[in-house]
Length: 254
Image 1: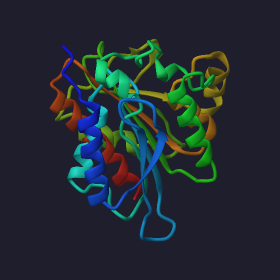
Image 2: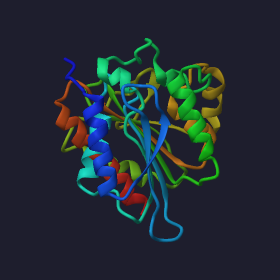
Image 3: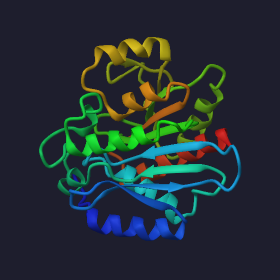
Image 4: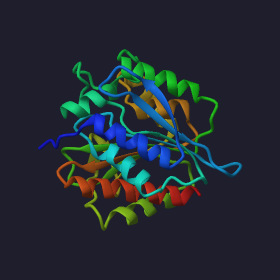
């Protein structure tokens, strides 16, 4: 059952926490119940990693936005990393509790064509960041059909320990989906692992790109994760699961 999500209240809270945590705020798109914004924070040290985290592209998946709120509240985003956070990519969908936006479009299938105003604005913002060398990009999602946590990932060779760390961090908070096939893809231990060589074919075959496809195409040497929590679990459990996975990955790159 959908729990009411108030974008205006959430937006106000995020702005307050952004100021406390010394983030700057950029407006990506104005014309929704509240603006779609990006929070940015520069590291205080040289050669610090660049990390991008986005949430809330599906309006029936509210855990992601609350993850960013929780981590801001807990001062998780320190000055040892260059942070870019997008807490709420689909305010109209979150307000309605629908996967799609208010026009009935799944924004997470529009990152090749960029026909929706929200995604077109996000793509424009992302292209402005194109000179940055990201170390890590994370998109936060939920799955109404999954019995537990799972993850889509592209990781460079030799970085497999990071999957062990995520598994260990999550397993005591949430069940993990151990199916050998998830969403039509081969999975192992809760992870759907792609490599860049075979993923090029996926990019060419798919016309309706999710956000992650665009990020991977334009940042091929970066660690990529799409974290999926099980929507049937209580909201706080889903939030805690995402937080544990994020914390495990951040520890691995710092």
